[in-house]
Length: 186
Image (tube, rainbow, N blue to C red):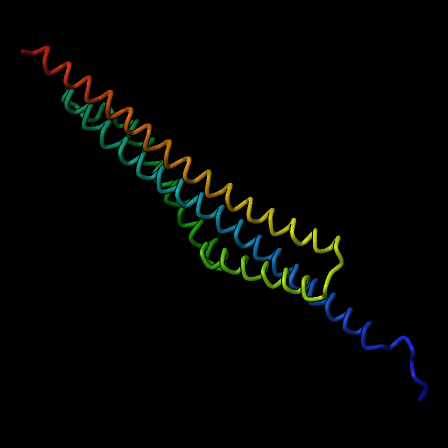
């Protein structure tokens, strides 16, 4: 049998590395999709709970307010029906989110998988002793990921800071108002 001169070890190694690179790229893409799906489901879940509690609270407060002011809680019957229908729809949405998220990994697991797959992709790219241009591209990918992480952390801490500042301002204004109203009675 004649030897095929196109069949060399270097080409086979390049092909194998290319297949590994494609496989790692596909794993990173699927991990990103899983993470995005989980984040969407979590947002819908939290919004559903918020709407459920708000509609229940509105029905209770509205009924109590109408009962105390007019003495007839049946006058708020339409409001109670609207709040009950909103509560029912939000609970149905929560059940739908629960069943839709059964095959999706948890957020922590999806983030860990994404980080692991990205690291294996970077290692497979760097293992081949890339040229200067490829190394620069790898560096830019890593820096972009780090910058995105820092921006996400910054948004989170900014939101916490602004919430606390708002709470402090409202508390200060409420305290001043209550103190002013209290001294007016004396």
